[in-house]
Image 1 (spheres, helix red, strand yellow):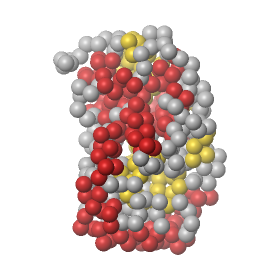
Image 2 (tube, rainbow, N blue to C red):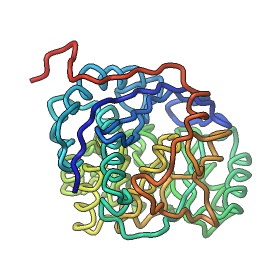
Image 3 (spheres, rainbow, N blue to C red):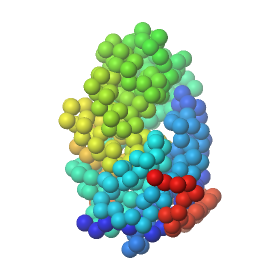
Image 4 (cartoon, rainbow, N blue to C red):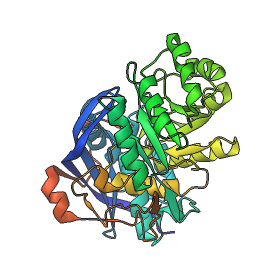
Length: 380
């Protein structure tokens, strides 16, 4: 295959307003500032990635500001003008920086897209995907009352979503899940706690077992795999880990300890597509199902999620809902759409979606071009 040699990287910082507020145990999101990474190969091919960050360091330690800084001063200079024979090399090229997985993922995914386009192959095919379509679930933020939640669930069930994920937190959990189950006894339903509980809440969390949930996602601390093993021993409901899994090694240790029975793979959280594929393969070898969570991505991030979900062990519907559920207009063409809970995997080169430059310009608040490997900080 033809290698990629980056001659320029353009950082497009954008601001997009969500159609509706999205509330979790972290807080409420009304809009997103995102840094889109456009990696330009010597042949003129552009690959795209994005920082799936928020403005505040609530999900992990990164923000859009810090991720952009890391990209400009450390990560992009390391890959600029290098001959990259395959995108799997990029992960190891960036290990000199600790953590900062979302920043790493933004440039790494852009290189995957550029490499696939340069070699005229769909990203899904390049990573070994086997599906032509994927099932889609819907994530629902914390609502003001159980009645409001049931109304939202009814709306999304009618639209054909294949899984419903309900955000929960202390004081907004059992009554909410109970109300949904009474109205919809058979739908695939899960709860996402976003680290809102502790082991002191075991008896409370055990009450969720009666609702036949697919899983409870990340109930305990964001960096924990020890206490989750203790919790999983006492729960019938499968525990799914999200925030705790930042790498293949984290996944290996969690499975070895019995900390979970399901893993949510988010490309940004684990540092890119390469590590996502490795975690997928580990889980597949151990009989542990995986699914792809969402980070309120633009169409670029959604396109990468779709490609990743084409891998065979993504057996649980992910959170890659259509663009229209989050944005008045997305920045890609065509926008991500769904038909009865199904999204088609794109077959065109790369991510299979084109960036709409006119729409991108309308939401861009800053643009920076990087064309040299120079950095303000020495790189080992």
